[in-house]
Image (tube, rainbow, N blue to C red; front, top):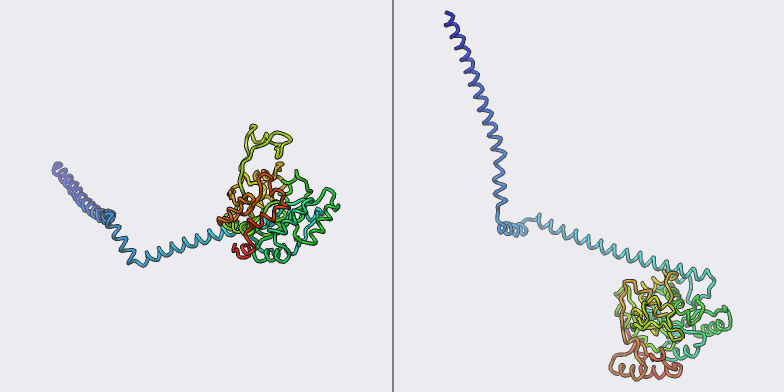
Length: 409
């Protein structure tokens, strides 16, 4: 009896477990089915993407060409990218223009301050300096400063009689051609003395002087050159500033045409470049007291323009004006200028037409159609006996009056 009951109870337990197992199996099946559907749904797109990714490079290129032609969206994007590039380019140009304008304003301000210092110091002021006119300066091609001395009256008159226009013609040259020409001189050690009064009387007659705040003296030519550029850049807004000696013959039209060719260059130093020996021996002409700075005896100077005639662009003249108080002066003026510019980003232009010889040299070149800009004798560092000979040089080597007035710079 007991055995029978035990069997029944065990059979009931087995039946219960069987029912439970079937339910669990059904639930597991349903769960697996759902999981399979979910897994299949998520993974279905992967092969499709891979299939697209496996498109060959050639097919991509073909599709790209077709899409560019047919898809208006791509055209819009391409056009938009061009517009953006154009705007970036315009912005870049605008920034460059603004930077140049700011730079010019800084240079003009420095030059004006330099001029103001000269005025406040009580120095003699040329008639060219009119403060109200500074604000409305016009643009000039070049300012030619003819270096002269108190005892050079005859040289000045010989220049006036040959290559330098006078009176109304000089004013016309400024107005029509943008060329300013002045004799450049400072004052004597005794300010207001007989030498200064003689210059004032001569200036009253001709009106062709630029007076500097400078004490004249041969050993002070470097200081005079520095003061000339400082004063000229404050008075006239020119592309170039030229220095020439009063015993040199100049063809103004040829000079203007030469300089005009380099207008697009920002920092230009033009002349007959040379590299002469550094003379350490005392008592010789062009002795260099600071010869030790240039190395061993027998060394040569760095390249620089010979002092009879040279030109520098506005940026360089302004640089000299701004830094005039810290620029070192060597005894030779042309060496000084070369030293001020040697460390800058400057284009040195060696033009041998700026240092032709006197006839027959300049005459032969003129006959060949190669008009000289300047003529002088190397042996005299100018035209030998220029007062007597410059008229002959002008007659045989001059460009002719019409050449200047017909020139277009």
